[in-house]
Amino acid sequence: MNRFDVVVVGGGHNGLVTAAYLGRAGLRVAVIESRQRLGGPCGGYAFLPGRSLAFTNSPGSLNPAVVHELRLADHGLRFVRADPTVVQQFDGRCFLGWRDPARVDRQLDAFAPGEADRYRELISALERLGASLRVSLDEPPPALAELRERLTDPEEHKLFSAVFEGSLTGLLETRLVSDQAKALLALLALNAQLVPPSTPGSAVGLMMRPFALAAAGAPRSGDAAERVALRGSTGLPVGSMSAIVDALEDCCRTHDVTLRTGSPVVRILHGPAGVRGVVTATGEEFTADRVVSAVNPVHLFRDLLDDAAMGPGIRAEVAGTAMRGSAFKVVLEVDSLPAYAGLPADADPERVRACQFRVGSSLGGIEESISRALLGHASDQPLMWGLIPTLTSPGLTPGKTHLISVNAWHAPYRPHDGPWDAERTDRFGRRCVEELSRLMPGLADRVVDHRFMNPVEIESELGLMESNITHGDMLPGNLFGARPHPEVAGYRTPLPGFYVSGAGTWPGGYVTGTPGRNTAKAVLQDLHHEQRRQA
Image 1 (cartoon, rainbow, N blue to C red):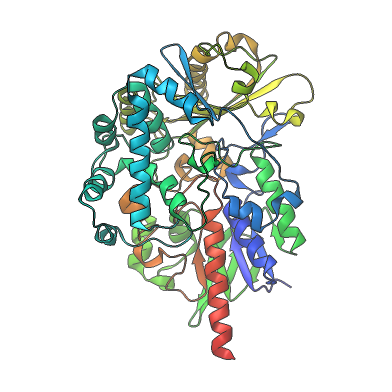
Image 2: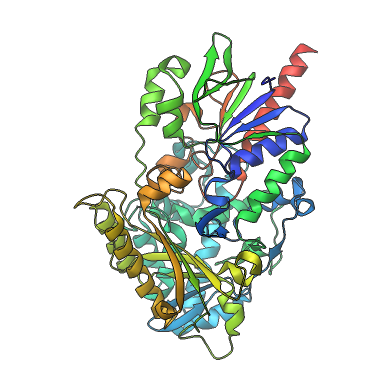
């Protein structure tokens, strides 16, 4: 009864995307998830009694192709198109990421005369570089050494060196003047990474949008969401980020995908001909000629595969990948929403509160926060991304209260002076609330309930190894032809019939669904070629 065409290990959003595509193609598919709920960090989680929402706060990152091709609107997925898309405070005044470039430019020039032109030229230069490199998010990329060979323009060679070999600090210091504009892009490039902006290659995060724009068929109109420098793109899902998982689950069931939760996979089965299936902690076997792993590659190679699967060398190298996670979760239930401090006079306060807010005011402060975390010290000025999901999803609480969902970064997984405990967790959580109060004065007085979740709890409850949301650093050497390893960087592996997916594969983490889509495409291509050989 447990015989399938494909077994997917891991029911996070990428595993569900892979399963939905394969089920839509007519294959018999099973998803085996260790937790009792699907979706991983993107799925619903009861942070407070009767208050369920997702850990993730990354509106707009979901690949529009996934939404369209899987017809997720037919499965209940709807979006609110926020405008502005982001608010970030500097010295008591708020910058707003309007979709209208002219409104953004006026704010940039208020930071420093001519800053808008410098900012736009940097964005345009990165887009031109992305087009010349011909890297697609929808295909495995070439090795890093091959990228430079694709360039012929000397200026693009210089920019390539600055982005891929220099540091984010170096790039921003030479291209921009104001601390504010530098911080806007630094927080965009680094947010979840425990990588200081002074690190070589740390600017590569700014290339993901140019790569997306360079893809065939990318929108080119001036108001296309993908062209907004600080985009909200796809939009805010109605029902919180977990609505994405709800729609994917419904899509999978429509295509007769078997969804098994509460069943940790403990071993990948294989033999002389290739992969044979998986076995769970209870000894139950699910057999298939094709298996897709959508879990963290370190967990996969360390715990689920043996040396015979692909050789001890590959296994040891992937299993030894440093996670260096630092995520900390803050969920606040408030009896009313405070006004934001420092909003411009022409801004509608309600529209601003509905978009994402970011906390991180200077490039130097970001460098210090990350550097301290690498030494095991929690930051005194934590960097944060957050949403108020009840403004676009009012059913998340039964009354008139609101939820504020915050992801704070650079809380070390292993503090230098002892493990995380209740007192340490509460202290850091309250420090986050203090920092948020600069944007939202009087916030602490409005809190009626709260949940602070430290990195160890996040690992235990949500399955994020060492609280790393991207399944490893996203630096050039970890991305191009090497994610998670050169021998398994194209979703396929040396073990016949076995594939890898998820945030630990190209193009990396965040809620895009692109790794899941790409892996499904690889499986279907291999099936097609196999059928042609047999014909």
